[in-house]
Image (cartoon, rainbow, N blue to C red; front, top):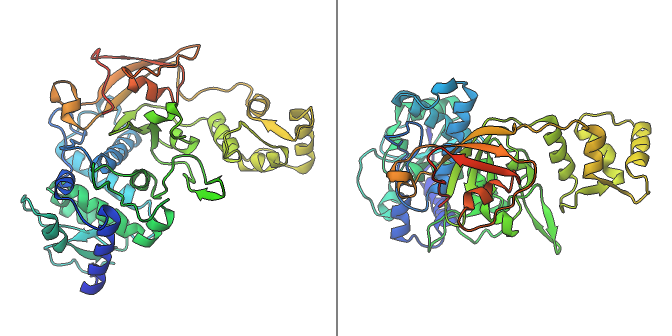
Length: 427
């Protein structure tokens, strides 16, 4: 493990601090973020959030924990794991988030002699549970380097208290930023002058949420980049490991693209006006859903049609027949009126006539909210619901049911019956 020079470490940490908090750190906001990763006594794999604010880190970590649980095929006993397994899932989630960055893995460390024969950047603090003011906290940090993700895993397994103790959330956050690089993050943000953590209310920005979920600190959740009045606004550039849904989409305050709505694993972070929670179900993306996503990637304005000249590119991206002669025949068929456009519905009917959804008509989903005050009886547990996809769309924009409203941004015709007979809170 290689230690940075004190001068370069100090300068980098000062830049990270400014990127996160702005020109100064409000002590009350800092205290809300000063918590470790610890699990609910009522749900072994569910993280608990102490105060409002750090859900921008906790919710993505929880999503990657659930992703790992799904990938391991534990079966019906996935909710019954021991403490060692929980620590393993936590370390795996942290490493998954760090490896989304393009540079070597990073952590910030303090208080220990560096290990030998290493080369990524790690941030660690002393394991003592003591309340430090932010100046003291920042003064205790130092940067170390590791080369391989296996070294990062070993580092955390040997020092699991680094994540579990008072400043675990902040240490991971500084690690992600150090791994990605301050300048790279600023180049991806809409406004590099805006801090990633709001100085007044303490919530994480969309750029921070996207950084944790996808490894890119872009400020929007639509697919690809969009040109708005000559201004290039950056969005999500590829299918994500875990997804994101936004309550505000039904008001058209934002548009969540297909990459986040159809992640590789059926786990979504759900964003309300003030908080992030989690949803999990069981359904990988089907070929027809892949086709819709690829088609829409050539339709960044969301018109549900593309220029006819792009048909060959779409077919090639889907690895379908794309020879010029065949494309000319299909263009004439799909654009019979010679308007120069190909409609999404016509494309899907031609190439995927027996479209099947990945989600069955009925399925089970689980919702997670890490704030005890938002959970029944103050117990942080996964809330189980039985969902059904109705034959007709049921739009629900009632303020009394924001959960259903948010779910309907992906499944317009969904209805859910919660086993507890209480609709979980998004806030």
